[in-house]
Length: 298
Image 1: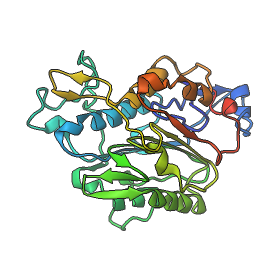
Image 2 (image 1 turned 180 degrees about the vertical axis):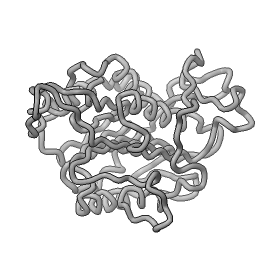
Image 3 (image 1 turned 180 degrees about the horizontal axis):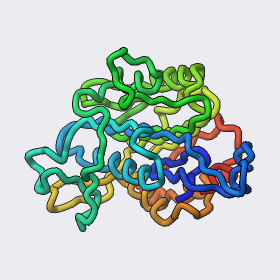
Image 4 (image 1 turned 90 degrees about the horizontal axis):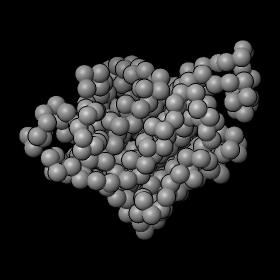
């Protein structure tokens, strides 16, 4: 997959990082220095906010995105991975130290090369907001910091249980829409991104974007206000659902592409079928200055 859009539309599988042609780069307003150029200032923050075995799919969602982002060229040092629980080591797991998103069990998402930056009870609203804003205690290592700058293109993916203008963390606290908007505002003021793509897979996901006001932001949600987001399929061996519908179809879209394919962000939006999702995907684009047909040329 090609750089999703010079800006990591990596959205969920995000295709960022491949060489882009002169035509593609020009669409982003930054002329290339040669016939091809590599868009390398790409970052990803991938967050599973749910605990407990029955939320297995949320960890699988996040690890699926993690795998895809790495496959497309974003290295671990530019990925912040936050997992609120460790399903791989859960006593109920029939496949110890493994996590799958498909019944054929051909791809272990929790392989040897997974680097988790925040795990278990480290995944809190406070730590999440500190990652975005860069307001860390001095003792926090660089490996757990988002070291982006004003030229960075960031994918923020979150999955878990949510409701009207909130996303639950650990089933004990909530990230409110105004918390997210304030963090993004601080990021913009501190020159921590050029373009930010926020993707959320949860119930009533669209409401989490209602307070955003910072320019350079695109937002994609799995459901509208009043709608639930649904799991895709159950793994009878694992005993629970292993991936959510929105994430499943986002991944399917990107898996059809390779690094050199050319597709726009609008083609991703148009690929979402409400009948298959069982919800209505939402896109907020008013804070982004370019036409979607010009964004990303995957």
